[in-house]
Amino acid sequence: MPVDANEIILRGISGSPGICIGKAYLVDREGVDVIEKYKINPESVRKETDRFKTAVTKARNELEDTIKNVPEELRHHAAILETHLLLHKDKMFYGKAIDLIKTEHINAEWALKETTAQAKAMFNDIPDPYLKSRAADIEHVSERIMRNLVGRKAVNIAGIDKRVILVAHNLSPAQTSQIQLEKVMGFITDRGGRASHTAIIARTLEIPAVLGLDNATSIIKNDAIIIVDGAAGIVIINPEEETLIRYDELAKKYALRKADILRTSAQPAKSADGQAFSIMGNIELPEEVVAVKDHGGDGIGLYRTEFLYMNRDTFPDEQELFLQYKEVAELMYPQPVTIRTLDVNGDKAILGMETPDEVNPALGLRAIRFCLQKPGIFKTQLRAILRAAAFGNVRLLLPMISGCEEIRETIQLIDQVANSLRKDQLPHNRDIKIGIMIEVPSAAVIADQLADLVDFFSIGTNDLVQYTLAIDRGNRQVAYLYNTLHPAVIRMIKFVVDAGKKKHIKTFMCGEMASEVISLPILMGIGIDALSMAPQSIPSIKNMIRKISVSESRLFLKEVLKQTSAACTMRLIEDTYGKMLKNGV
Ligand code: PEP
Ligand code: MG
Image (cartoon, rainbow, N blue to C red; front, side, top):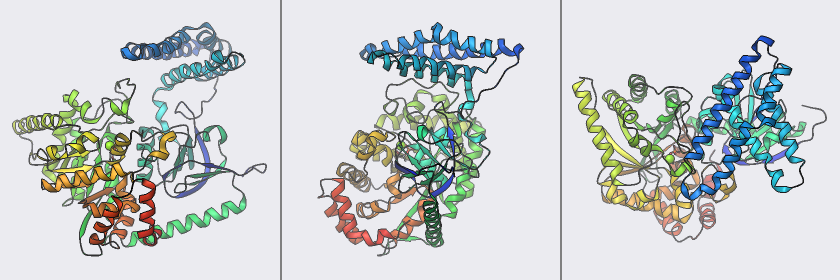
């Protein structure tokens, strides 16, 4: 610990529980390890300037494409992008970086970093507030070039070779999924909210994470000692001796309590009045099956398949997908494996693929919309799923359904795929159960119509809350409004479950709400059929189910439905179930 250090406490948003203490490892704003300066041979100068020029050209092309695609109603905003375009050609910027490479024989990344810093300083010195604020444009342009310059290094989280805590401005789900558990103890970010995919992955990996810290990357220095308290959403920089001792104790207690609950995880989840619930695990990669089994999961309720498409340049082919799905299906058999088809875009862009430049990606070409527009990619995945279904208890789940048409179109594709598999004489199973995610309000509202077309529903509260309350799930500015206990959310869930029951289909929940012990009495009262969550949450949810009676939870729900705010509902939960909840991890 540095001797001159003063303890600093930062407060953010809880991303994933747990406590870790260790050295900070800064991931630069551009998403790469802190940019390093190195000398190049005089004979490599030409190559280095070419590398820089190529990165600038790529950045310029990207920007030109963006400008071309700006919708008519936003044309006036395109002016700012035109300014960026000019900056790419600016002598002070472009020319200077090339000069630096030539005269100082330094790498292109460092030359860009230097030039950016100088240009920003120049703008900052200008008294005119408008011109001053143009420093931000320089930064945007520089970031775009830097991303092109470092290429795939941008996601080289996997290359970290010491035991550290990551400190990043933002981590994409693709980067987070590269974390090596034996190296990264936890992570903290300036951006992000609890329901972001980055937080979800942290919970699956069972590493502590605090998000939405705002300025952690500018306060924390590389190698500084930090404590991350994931549940409390607190980060302590340069902790004093006493603080270190206290947190060491807390970490031990947390581990003991977790181990205690884990011991009972194999027992069935039967309510106090004898109703059995199926409690399953969410996975992103086949390796996580072990965690679901170890934590007592009754199957896989959500297999987020998009992660197999990330961090690579080419799409996986049918055989690769088939082998992965088959492995999961066989490992879990006879328990079910619910394979969700590709849910890309939104906050999960795929590297190596042209991503649509969208003003609002969460409302854009995401999930089923993307798949139906790219039938080639979709059919490859559907073929792999139907083939794997011949080797286990596989169900198919469609993300982001907003109307009946999307289901009908998909079923047509499934039929086509089954026909072609028959012709190819490949073993497959067309009688697979087909379900849909209910995560868009329109789907919830017409749940009775959708129920006629599918075998089951799975409520995705992460998106359902985002779209119902109009709150970006990854935006820390509005994270305080993101609440699964909002009366509109509870009513919507009840509406869907009731519609399912009328049509005799089951409703599961696989959004993060399923893992919140505080919500459990409400979900049991509503009559949810099964819950699926990050494997680490399974034992505490099972434990809590055993303590709650369904008949009491139904009466409790009547009171909940009278509440007019999330805060009132929270108080009611605390008054009724407070003691029980205190013992949950
Ligand atoms: C959800 O939206 O609740 C969900 C489970 O899907 P994802 O988090 O992958 O968007
Ligand atoms: Mg979703």
